[in-house]
Length: 205
Image (cartoon, helix red, strand yellow):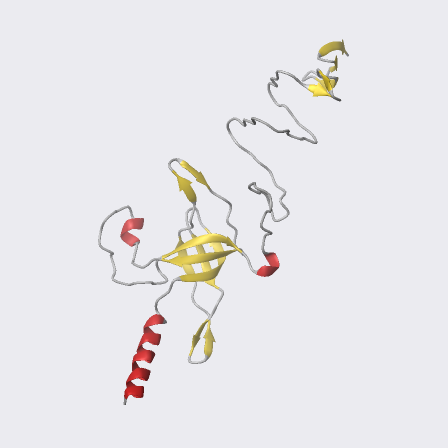
């Protein structure tokens, strides 16, 4: 009798936990302006049969932000994400209301998820940087950096293979070949070649 009661309670708990969703690994299927759609990649087992879960649509992605600053990265279909399931229905909050009752009484439901993008299976996992710096770029750590504003470097050295100055270059001291001053040939907008030796224009042709 006790064993039967225990089995019945255990089965009830198991059924209840089956509908308590927490975090789901999903594959991104499409990207909208402010939401994504994705499909869970780990199937659900129902009576011994593997069943694929339906597509989650209009899932808000997690964007790192503080105050008026944020870091937003491109999201592409085919990538992976973690769908973090909210405890309660957040539809009212998402529509712009704070401190209100949930519109529906559902809990831990697939309808109330946020997408944390940037997870990978082992074959495509990004190597964790060993140096104390942030790595930016594609999976080979190559990419472009575009910004509006100033870059201030207090100490250290910046090494450039090639540098294009599109407007004004200002400097207090420049060394070329270990010597102070700029030396080299430069082409002006009107096609003339300007030769500079140790910071002095020596020829225009």
